[in-house]
Length: 103
Image (tube, rainbow, N blue to C red; front, side, top):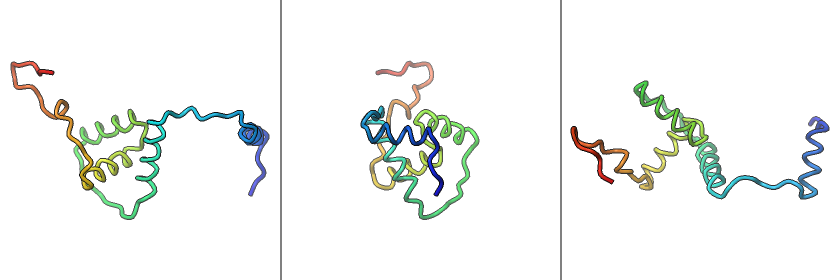
């Protein structure tokens, strides 16, 4: 194992002295823990075909969530098979032509 460089040593010393604090919020920590669990439990690899537009939309959503897109797909599928995926009707249903969506 290599010796830590001076900046790494400084970080360790600051941590041990209690001068470093976590800036993550509880919701961010929950999201990161979920991503870590989904990433760590890879038992099988699959190949699926998606339309280019669906893949692009997934990649954008993953970027917004701060996750790799494969992790987002895995998380959505896991929530679906465990019955924890909830539909957001307002995003799924488009207004009828000529009418406005009601809130």
